Length: 367
Image (cartoon, rainbow, N blue to C red; front, side, top):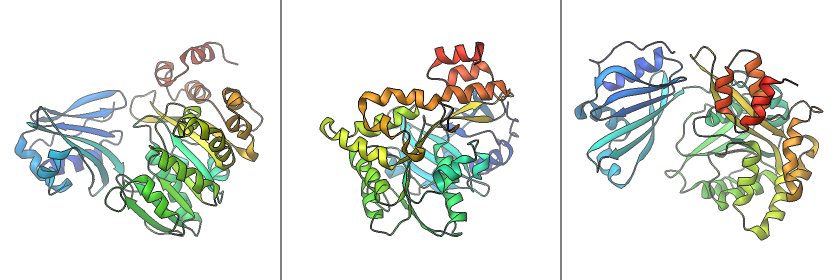
């Protein structure tokens, strides 16, 4: 378990959050509900903080720090905004429950600076295989809370430190703030700087970008423009919500009408550099998370035939298991390696897998 934060129940909530962010490094999520105990999510699940029930008046300074106009805005829906603390940044979602009688805050803790790429848990060849390319599409996918934003930020920071370029991001909300190193960086937030991801992406193409990061592909307009941008000379990093690398490709193509998919698949097969699907698994000691990742690399267009021809798409799974390039891999390959290295338990590996039958066989009958 993560170390228990000190009891700071007499301090204002902002001070308690700062103390928590400083002391409990494995804490990523905090749930604060009016008249209830505040809860933190650790690698082994949710547990209460020793603050006692949070009264309504205790919430007001924190809510005002998140959004001065929160009382008005919350009537029309949830508020999604960042909160900057001295040692970390919080992604805050504020919403009403019980017919508007109570307020809830869902907080995601982020470090002020992106992790160095080598500390994310991804293999180092990601840099040469993906980030040194001048154009193409990189898809980051995985369930909510799997570290996609952290990986995207680490990738952009690597480019920022190593390449003279113009990076444009479209985010909702902005989570990591970048300072210029070798790159110019334009961070645009939906809806304050641009009305939508699709609009922001179309506008970005007229802003002389070399690298574009799209916070989420969630509609046909964004999917279409992402493909166009990746094909037309930009390096594009885009995130999606799927449980597998193949699922990301299927979902991207599903945004288009059936009669357009063959043409879009040809574009994707040409533009795609790679897909990384992430899952955060509790470490064996229960005090932190370990990254498991499934990856499809399209080196020398080797994966292109399986993407372009729908009849061959199912063969992508076999392509990921091939050892010729030693780069692409299934999630189960990653989970087996982590289990054998005693970084995660077999039980947690099984929970993280989407092909559990295969993983069970791999763990009990290693190849």
